[in-house]
Image (cartoon, rainbow, N blue to C red; front, side):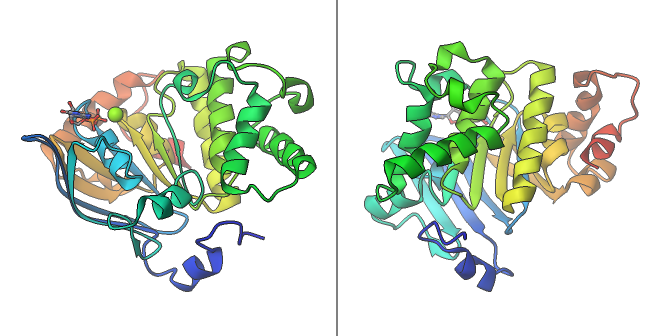
Length: 289
Ligand SMILES: Nc1ncnc2c1ncn2[C@@H]1O[C@H](COP(=O)(O)OP(=O)(O)O)[C@@H](O)[C@H]1O
Ligand SMILES: [Mg+2]
C-alpha cells in the first residue's frame, strides 16, 4: 500500500535499524556569521525528535538545510542522509522528488504557506498532483476529501471550494497538514507548527499530530522554542543554543536529569508557560502519556 513514494517503505523497513534521517557534523553559515555549528542527530523510523531552543538558535536553518531550501548564499557543510541516501550531493531534480513527498514540511504561519486566491480543494489536489500526475481527476478528488477528513476538517465536500480566509487559523494548519501528508511522507518536519495558534487550538493540533504519527508510523522533526510543547510530542529532545546542540536525551530523561544549565533554565521556565501553574515540574512528562 505504501509503495507510493520512490523511497519505498520496504527499503526503509529492511534497514530499520538504520536511522531514517542521519545528520552529522552539520554546519551552516550566512557569510561570516555561523548559524549552526557542527550538530549531529538521528531520527529513527516512527520516532519524533523535538528540537528546542531560543529564537535565533538555528532551528529553522537546520530544517531548511535538510530540505535544501536555504538561500544559495548559505554555506552548508557536513552530512545529511535520508533512508541511507546522502541529500547534500543530490542533483536538484532528485531533491525535488523528496520535497513534499517522502519528506514533507509544515510551518508556523499557515496563511503565508497557502495561496489566498486558490480554493483549498485545488491546493490540496495540487500538492498530490505535483508528485503524482498519473492519478486520474476523479481519484484525485476522493483523495483530497479523504485527506480533509483525516485531519478533521468539517464538511469536506462543502468546504472544498472555500478559500483560505474562510477558515480559522487552526483549520488552516489542518489544511497544511493534509497537504503535507497526502503523499504519505516518511518524515514530517514541523517548524513551530502551533506557535501562531491560541492555547486551545494548539492542544488540538498537537493531538492531531500525535494521532497521525501513530496511524502513519511517521517520523517527525518537531521544532519549537517552547519545551512544554515539544515534550508533549517528542520521544527524544535535542536542545539548541547559539547554533549548537548542547544536550540530547529521551524526553523523560531530559526532564528528570537535565545536564546542561540551559536545559535546566528551559525546564524552570516551562511550568509558567502552562495553563496550570500549580502542576509539578514533571507535568510535561505526564502530558506525554
Ligand atoms: N537567510 C538568512 N540570511 C542571514 N542570516 C540568517 C538567514 N536565516 C537565518 N539567519 C540567521 O541564522 C541564525 C539562526 O536563525 P534561525 O535558524 O532562523 O533560528 P531559529 O529558527 O532557531 O529561531 C540567526 O542568527 C539568523 O539571524
Ligand atoms: Mg525558526
